[in-house]
Structure formats: structure tokens, C-alpha cells
Image (cartoon, rainbow, N blue to C red):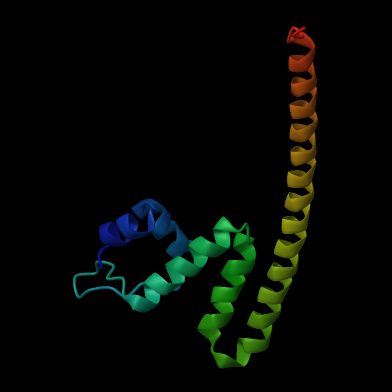
Length: 128
């Protein structure tokens, strides 16, 4: 696939795809004989993974380290697993923080709904 096709498929600009490759966020993309990036299934898999990880807030530095270790081979499996475990722990903490914030927002919204309902009852003339 061309960079334009990959860009459209994943909603990532060509410049961002080039940047991801340049900083090591994804492994080098195979190239055609003329030097044009030719994204294969493996390259697309990396893009999908990084898009997912970044959307979840996983640190770029950790992902770059993960890719660098991956490129070194199977001897780095333990180190890669450790990175993923650490990032998972951080994600769980962020999710707990976000849930606490959501709970607080829901409480505040409920409070305002109750206040507005009480205000409407006071304004409504009683039949009688």
C-alpha cells in the first residue's frame, strides 16, 4: 500500500506516518525498487498497534523503546513484556482516575437536575 492509501485507511497524515517511522515508533517500512514506501501487512499491523496505544495515552518513549527492542530480536521478549506491563499499570491508574472524575460529574449533574426540578415545582402554580 502507498503512504496515501495507508493515510486514508488509518486517518493518519502522511507526514505523521513518516514521523512515526523516523523516530522509531514503527519499524522501517519496506520500500519499492524506486524507494517509495510500500506498506505491507506487518507495517499496517504496527500502525494499528501504535494508533491504539497512542489513543489510550501510552507514552511515546515507551513505545519507541518497545520497537527498538523488538528489532533486536527474541532475546528482548522479557524486556518488551515488562514495558507492556508497566504501561498497562499506568493505563489502569488513568482509567481509575477517569472513572472517579466521571462519577463526580454524574453526581454534580444529578445535583443540578434535582435543583432544577425543585425550582420548577416552586414556579408551577398549584391547582386548587
